[in-house]
Image (cartoon, rainbow, N blue to C red; front, top):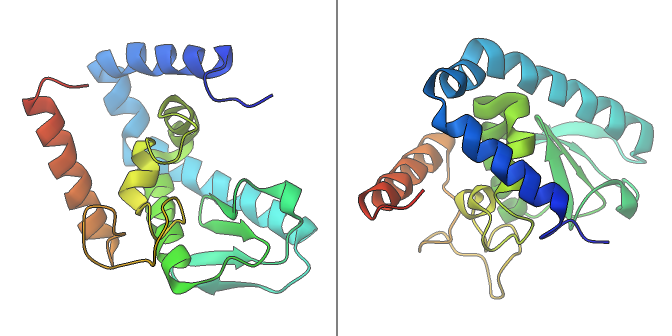
Length: 178
Protein backbone atom coordinates (compact mmCIF):
# COMPACT_ATOMS: atom_id res chain seq x y z
CA UNK A 1 0.00 0.00 0.00
CA UNK A 2 1.53 3.36 -0.99
CA UNK A 3 2.11 5.93 1.72
CA UNK A 4 0.83 8.86 -0.41
CA UNK A 5 -2.42 10.18 1.04
CA UNK A 6 -2.34 7.62 3.85
CA UNK A 7 -3.36 8.28 7.44
CA UNK A 8 0.34 8.23 8.30
CA UNK A 9 1.14 11.01 5.82
CA UNK A 10 -1.87 13.10 6.90
CA UNK A 11 -0.95 12.62 10.57
CA UNK A 12 2.62 13.67 9.86
CA UNK A 13 1.39 16.74 7.98
CA UNK A 14 -0.80 17.69 10.92
CA UNK A 15 2.08 17.24 13.38
CA UNK A 16 4.45 19.32 11.25
CA UNK A 17 1.84 22.10 10.85
CA UNK A 18 1.29 22.30 14.62
CA UNK A 19 5.01 22.21 15.40
CA UNK A 20 5.81 24.87 12.78
CA UNK A 21 3.34 27.28 14.44
CA UNK A 22 5.30 27.03 17.70
CA UNK A 23 8.24 29.33 17.04
CA UNK A 24 10.42 28.24 19.98
CA UNK A 25 10.01 24.57 19.03
CA UNK A 26 10.85 25.26 15.38
CA UNK A 27 13.91 27.30 16.37
CA UNK A 28 15.04 24.63 18.83
CA UNK A 29 14.63 21.64 16.49
CA UNK A 30 16.27 23.40 13.54
CA UNK A 31 19.13 24.92 15.54
CA UNK A 32 22.49 23.57 14.28
CA UNK A 33 23.34 22.26 17.76
CA UNK A 34 20.34 19.92 17.47
CA UNK A 35 20.18 19.41 13.68
CA UNK A 36 23.87 18.68 13.06
CA UNK A 37 24.10 15.64 15.37
CA UNK A 38 20.94 14.35 13.67
CA UNK A 39 22.72 14.70 10.32
CA UNK A 40 25.74 12.83 11.70
CA UNK A 41 23.51 10.07 13.08
CA UNK A 42 21.66 9.78 9.75
CA UNK A 43 25.02 9.61 7.93
CA UNK A 44 26.18 6.84 10.27
CA UNK A 45 22.94 4.91 9.64
CA UNK A 46 23.36 5.43 5.88
CA UNK A 47 26.96 4.21 6.05
CA UNK A 48 25.97 1.10 7.99
CA UNK A 49 23.04 0.39 5.62
CA UNK A 50 25.25 0.99 2.58
CA UNK A 51 28.16 -1.07 3.92
CA UNK A 52 25.93 -4.05 4.66
CA UNK A 53 24.05 -3.95 1.34
CA UNK A 54 26.42 -2.44 -1.20
CA UNK A 55 28.29 -4.75 -3.55
CA UNK A 56 30.46 -1.89 -4.79
CA UNK A 57 33.04 0.31 -3.17
CA UNK A 58 31.70 3.11 -0.97
CA UNK A 59 33.39 6.36 -1.89
CA UNK A 60 32.80 10.11 -2.03
CA UNK A 61 31.59 11.34 -5.40
CA UNK A 62 29.79 14.50 -6.50
CA UNK A 63 29.28 15.90 -3.00
CA UNK A 64 27.86 12.70 -1.44
CA UNK A 65 29.19 9.38 -0.22
CA UNK A 66 27.97 6.85 -2.78
CA UNK A 67 27.04 3.29 -1.84
CA UNK A 68 26.58 1.71 -5.26
CA UNK A 69 25.16 -1.64 -6.33
CA UNK A 70 22.70 -1.79 -3.44
CA UNK A 71 19.70 -4.06 -4.02
CA UNK A 72 16.80 -2.13 -5.53
CA UNK A 73 14.52 -2.83 -2.57
CA UNK A 74 16.94 -0.98 -0.25
CA UNK A 75 15.98 2.52 -1.44
CA UNK A 76 13.21 4.47 -3.15
CA UNK A 77 13.10 5.31 -6.87
CA UNK A 78 16.64 5.51 -8.35
CA UNK A 79 18.31 6.08 -5.00
CA UNK A 80 17.92 7.60 -1.54
CA UNK A 81 20.15 9.95 0.40
CA UNK A 82 20.41 9.34 4.14
CA UNK A 83 22.54 12.02 5.75
CA UNK A 84 25.58 12.29 3.47
CA UNK A 85 25.19 8.79 1.98
CA UNK A 86 23.53 8.14 -1.38
CA UNK A 87 22.23 4.56 -1.65
CA UNK A 88 21.72 3.46 -5.25
CA UNK A 89 22.12 0.58 -7.63
CA UNK A 90 23.53 2.45 -10.61
CA UNK A 91 22.10 6.00 -10.78
CA UNK A 92 25.39 7.90 -10.88
CA UNK A 93 25.04 10.61 -13.53
CA UNK A 94 26.48 14.03 -12.65
CA UNK A 95 22.95 15.49 -12.60
CA UNK A 96 21.69 12.87 -10.15
CA UNK A 97 24.73 13.40 -7.91
CA UNK A 98 24.12 17.18 -7.89
CA UNK A 99 20.47 16.52 -7.00
CA UNK A 100 21.53 14.23 -4.15
CA UNK A 101 24.14 16.76 -2.93
CA UNK A 102 21.27 19.22 -2.38
CA UNK A 103 19.49 16.52 -0.33
CA UNK A 104 22.68 16.15 1.70
CA UNK A 105 22.57 19.90 2.42
CA UNK A 106 18.92 19.51 3.45
CA UNK A 107 19.88 16.75 5.90
CA UNK A 108 22.64 19.01 7.25
CA UNK A 109 20.21 21.90 7.75
CA UNK A 110 17.23 19.97 9.19
CA UNK A 111 18.88 16.94 10.80
CA UNK A 112 16.47 14.17 11.76
CA UNK A 113 13.59 16.66 11.44
CA UNK A 114 13.94 16.11 7.68
CA UNK A 115 12.16 12.77 8.02
CA UNK A 116 8.75 14.10 9.15
CA UNK A 117 9.19 17.26 7.05
CA UNK A 118 9.83 15.20 3.92
CA UNK A 119 6.87 12.91 4.59
CA UNK A 120 4.62 15.92 5.25
CA UNK A 121 5.76 17.48 1.96
CA UNK A 122 4.11 14.55 0.18
CA UNK A 123 5.20 11.42 -1.60
CA UNK A 124 4.57 12.88 -5.06
CA UNK A 125 8.06 14.02 -6.04
CA UNK A 126 6.89 16.72 -8.43
CA UNK A 127 5.02 18.45 -5.56
CA UNK A 128 7.48 17.73 -2.74
CA UNK A 129 9.29 20.96 -1.81
CA UNK A 130 12.52 19.11 -1.02
CA UNK A 131 12.58 17.46 -4.46
CA UNK A 132 11.72 20.76 -6.14
CA UNK A 133 14.59 22.47 -4.29
CA UNK A 134 16.98 19.68 -5.33
CA UNK A 135 15.90 19.99 -8.98
CA UNK A 136 13.18 17.87 -10.54
CA UNK A 137 14.89 17.34 -13.90
CA UNK A 138 18.22 16.42 -12.37
CA UNK A 139 16.47 14.04 -10.00
CA UNK A 140 14.65 12.33 -12.86
CA UNK A 141 11.17 13.50 -11.88
CA UNK A 142 10.44 15.14 -15.23
CA UNK A 143 11.00 14.04 -18.81
CA UNK A 144 13.66 15.58 -20.97
CA UNK A 145 17.35 16.11 -20.65
CA UNK A 146 18.67 17.72 -17.48
CA UNK A 147 19.45 21.38 -17.86
CA UNK A 148 21.29 23.90 -15.76
CA UNK A 149 18.78 26.68 -16.29
CA UNK A 150 15.12 27.12 -15.54
CA UNK A 151 12.96 26.75 -12.46
CA UNK A 152 13.50 22.99 -12.13
CA UNK A 153 17.28 23.04 -12.41
CA UNK A 154 19.35 21.88 -9.47
CA UNK A 155 21.63 24.64 -8.22
CA UNK A 156 25.32 24.04 -8.79
CA UNK A 157 26.06 24.62 -5.12
CA UNK A 158 24.33 24.54 -1.76
CA UNK A 159 24.36 28.34 -1.27
CA UNK A 160 22.42 28.77 -4.51
CA UNK A 161 19.97 26.09 -3.37
CA UNK A 162 19.36 27.86 -0.09
CA UNK A 163 18.93 31.24 -1.82
CA UNK A 164 16.46 29.73 -4.28
CA UNK A 165 14.51 28.10 -1.44
CA UNK A 166 14.39 31.39 0.52
CA UNK A 167 13.12 33.23 -2.57
CA UNK A 168 10.36 30.64 -3.14
CA UNK A 169 9.38 30.75 0.52
CA UNK A 170 9.27 34.56 0.52
CA UNK A 171 7.05 34.55 -2.60
CA UNK A 172 4.72 32.02 -0.99
CA UNK A 173 4.45 34.11 2.20
CA UNK A 174 3.70 37.26 0.16
CA UNK A 175 0.89 35.38 -1.58
CA UNK A 176 -0.47 34.25 1.77
CA UNK A 177 0.59 30.62 1.38
CA UNK A 178 1.98 28.28 4.00
